[in-house]
Image 1 (cartoon, one colour):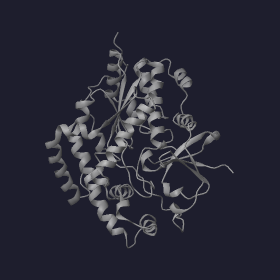
Image 2: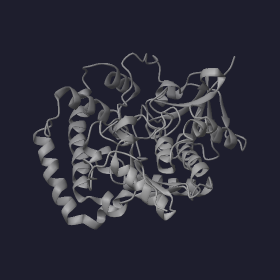
Image 3: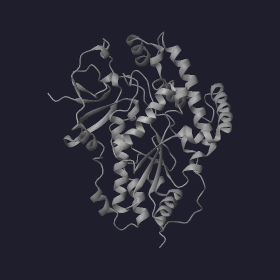
Length: 402
């Protein structure tokens, strides 16, 4: 029996407006101006620390479960809805969605995709572009590798997929498209770093035993199918954005926000700035060291935008994932799932998991929660204990209770 949702009939367009080019395209991730930088370099200060233990695995899994969602309450509230509507409402719950719930709920394309999957008895597909190597020295003291923040994010998506299984046994699959290799050029990381991060993501999915709900892909593999066209368009857009940064009707204030975020995202580690220079770069509006970084940032932002524009023109998403619901990690005004990549994303925490380090604190009702902070804000602080793995990689920080 075919399923349907009783809504006003309207013609479903083949494609929405390119999601990658709509609204916010880069997260606001610069360190706050009000942050008081320590006088002495905190990276060389003593700090309490311990080694990651096996019992931390359970701890991390608990952090991946949103305290803002109760499956029993949800089922009671939506019991009168038909199955596709109920699935849409679950995905669209405020615990998981930070963009407009009304726009998402009323999008005919997503309704059709859910109905089609239900009619075929297939898992609901959710497509999300995320997980990139960020090697900015204020965000991560060590070069970027997978940490607890990534684990919590992967497990959080798995928990959403399993919630869907409660009402629809085939469940859901998150098609996670890593763009670590794709953005290596503007972000200034090597192909080795980018590929290592991608391989670690795939390994972690297996280790965490969530490979049935989380699939990791490399966006470069898909775009290589359009190589000649893609590079022609990339060069076109690169020239356009360098010669006119406000192209595509971008407002000056929005461009400046993007520029500030890019400055805090690209790999300025390789520029060899001292701690004193980092303080001047990221805590004041003008100084002797800023021009080098600003010039680099201007080109990097143009290349970042050009990559996005060229990729959008290939239509790779529709070609390879025609039945997927599109999710995003950015604020958009179009009907798209703004996915809380981890439970507190865009609630008590504004940074993506790879834009900083996990810090575990007490939230409301003494429930532990994970925030992502610039590591420069917690390293060397005796109120936080550093937790490292057997390879010496910092996994997270925990607020000590005195």
